[in-house]
Amino acid sequence: MGAPPASRPGPARVASRTVVVTGASSGVGLAVARALGAAGARVVLAVRDRGRGEAAAATVPGAREVRIVDLADLRSVRAFAAAWDGPLDVLVANAGVMATPLLRTADGFELQLATNHLGHFALVNLLLGRVADRVVVVSSPAHRFGRVDLDDLNWERRRYAPWGAYAQSKLANLLFAAELQRRLAAAGSPVRALAVHPGWVATNLHRSTASRLQDLVIGHASRLLGPSPESGARTTLHAIAEDLPGGAYVVPGGPLELWGPPRIGRPSARARDPQLARALWAASERLTGVRFGLPAPA
Image 1 (cartoon, helix red, strand yellow):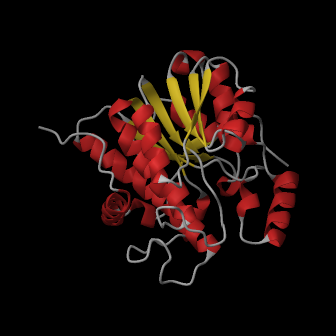
Image 2 (image 1 turned 30 degrees about the vertical axis):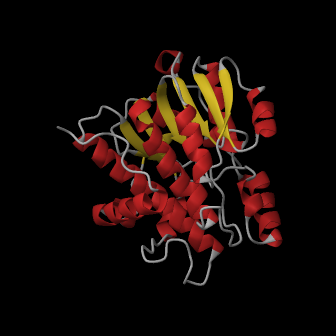
């Protein structure tokens, strides 16, 4: 079982554009980078490990570059943003971890919230003044099971639940994208924020879960049934290359949104809650010390 391979974005739509893809050393991120490179984009692979990043970049056609960013470390995020010195058309917030044991970052954040949401929140806002076209935030169907606990985002008082923390972070991705789009529109910016999910894809994301048995079961099922990363990349490529409205949520169009050609989907009611999105934004600003990346309209 599976799905057709990813279609390449039209060269005219991405040629010569600069696209940053976080988490591009493997999986869907690498598949996106390869497709963009083949279409003529300049691709910046934003990765945590230089060795893996360079090995991945060697498989990306055309103009590509490796830069280091650890989304679980705000110092690294700030350094990446401070070193950026050129054009930036599209920023793809793709990197993520899934259902990890309870781990805390150097900033004291729960690892999944830090990597999947807070690191990207900071990175996007620090670079937003340079983004010319759009921001694409990668979420997951797991957001439908998520609950954002604004009083305990980092699981300091609750009993930690690996899948609950993952679902919370994926819901946070959608709330972030929605609130970012509202703020961009209010600022009169032409930049668009979009969200996507790749569907069920055979990647190594499952290897980080809190259970070795769970890793083996999910990994075996993904290898047997999951489409390739190239197929999973189609929603992200669609969000990058097509003329879509800001705030769109691009999902696979097949059964249960597991695979299939991209289409516009509808996220959960919680993900569409503007009050929750504003509250999460405020909490994210407090935690990261990073504010909305554009000046207030005159």
